[in-house]
Length: 557
Image (cartoon, rainbow, N blue to C red; front, top):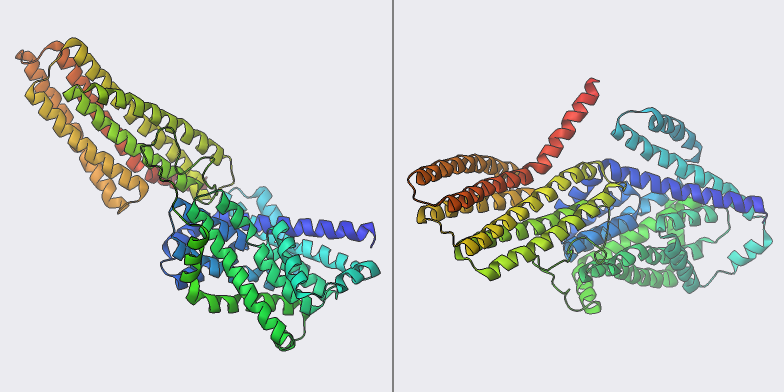
């Protein structure tokens, strides 16, 4: 085999890998948030999860990407292991679509996809149009790479050394091992099976050993999910093990069947594939996967239980009150672009709960003059500042990545939410300062003043709760936003009314000027806390409205 053939093979493989990556990433960028929403909402049972897994993986052309996303969903608490099992089973079927496409030899049509797509990517103004064009560009590059590899393999057939090496590969065990190792390195069973398909068409490998290599490819495809699971919580690792156990058990079952009835299996594949070796490989890949899912889907619950035996125990709980620790983002948590924005939102929700508690702790300290509460307010404020700094840095890094369009739009809103929560924390600190001032100066509030602050605080607590529910999606968004808007208006009216009554008390000398200044500042601060809560509630919707306005402007211009 000369250097030209080797370079052609390497170049073709590079184009094939890049084409698959470009096509998958472009689909995720164009519709990633919608696909994620489908994964979240339509996986209520294992059969539906399997169907979603099939179509999701067929769309993004990668079972590895799908299973990694599922692992990250489990790690984030968006999906349980039983839901994950169905999706993972379906992903194993969906991944066979690539080899089916390759088997139809669409290489001659690659230029028809490439030139128009390249022109659109270069000159189109609308981002979505460019992303859709990138999908077709990736499709064209993929088949251009296949064409190059196919020509290179035709040259390999003339190499006696290579033919001797390939013909020596006869052991079923070695076939499974080769498939496992090669796919584990490439991290894509679709790529390995596609290469296998081309080699079989060029008579570099016999069909019988190819069947065992396909089984090994399925095991090797588990590597990306396992690496992701190892970086996450125990449930994330369990989700990755579901993928591994499914493929190991399925491989054992199919290997036994092949060892017993290999000639009959090959005859069946030849019959349904019209003796086309490429189609035989693609159909074997699909049939094996469908058969494995049909056999193992009823036992998916047992496979989930097996993962608990393999990975026993629970994760150490880190509560939302933990000091200077990130729970949903950070180095100790599995990262996936598919859930990066969701994880940041959950961390912000945790930060919001801390700020809400702290404003109540500070108000309690203002009335009771409990010095321990005052000290706690300052400590929690340090934690809130730490979270704000860490989350903002995380959002900056995530914003530089290639994210789905909807997620990228939400990042700006999350920056604003972080700022509003941090400002609520600052108001709590201001109240704690007022409590210290009361202790130092012996300032007293009247009963009326205490009652008014209590009523206003209760309204503020309600609007913060509604705002966080709206932000985190806990309930009907439109209903929550309407409640927030109505309550915010009531708080504005109540604050003005309280200030008017306060002026009347000052005029009657019913309170001291020192107490009056503190009281007025506290009431104004609580009203501003309500404003920040309203901003939090409307942050996501406002970003969507802004995006729609920009699109309308773009259409008009």
